[in-house]
Image (cartoon, rainbow, N blue to C red; front, side):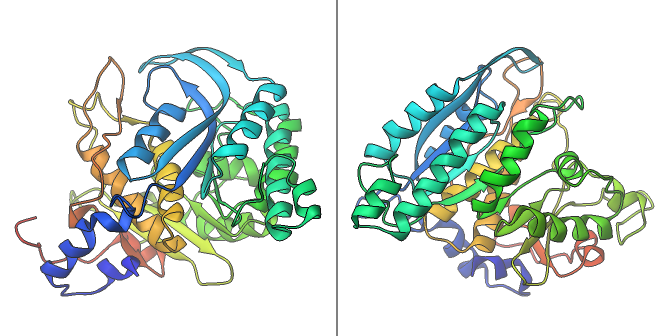
Length: 367
């Protein structure tokens, strides 16, 4: 598995670059084709997040992206000025149209906005699940009312639960959240909340790395999903709580996420923080959208979950390092293709303390 790449030391440079540069591994060769990935999310008129960023991510990683637009937003790189939610009829019609001709290998779910969209997406996932189980039979065709033909395999669903804005405003009603819990989350292969979203789902604060790990375990149990990736990019507790982070004027603590997959022990992923450069307008916009879509693209290519998360993290890290502002606000993540820099690969650890102080690896061929 590629997830073992940064766990080995020394790792031969030739093998590292072979893993990072195989175009066939993402299905770009003519005989493999592009797996289909759906993005069910809102539209970002500024192009930095939402379905616009998702389509760029899919294309960059050798997948064909399709969209189900759940909300229209009037926004730019500075802020959001207006939001108009799509109707349930519009969401249902789009799902029908895509399922009839472009069945997905993976689905990324982002901003759903309202209860109507949540209910339609939940109904589709239930129908797809039933149609897959009864593939080829009359009962399966009836259950799969969304599809002209039953799916060959149930698509891998990655949900980035957009619940709270950066200003702290709720983006999904209580009714919508209840529907999300009951009809969408139990059918997801992976849930990717950030700290604020995890706190909203659990209705409690998360202030330490130990609490983050416990929260990921509890979220998986409560949601009934396959796995949870709790993102810690915005968290400061790893440095503040003295849980292994470097101090004394040294490099800032790494960005750390924790992955809980089934009953397997939690895995911590850490990578160097990408500074808020002037060229990037002081930061990056749309990192959560890009990460979840990159994971979905990797799953669509047939990679195991842990490998998909590792490669998606490397994709986002590399994209942030190359980001350049296009407006007055934060820059969109750059879409630079398959991760080509070994330094963008995250380090995997079994504990938060080890992840907060990752080992230094030998540089590979000048990288």
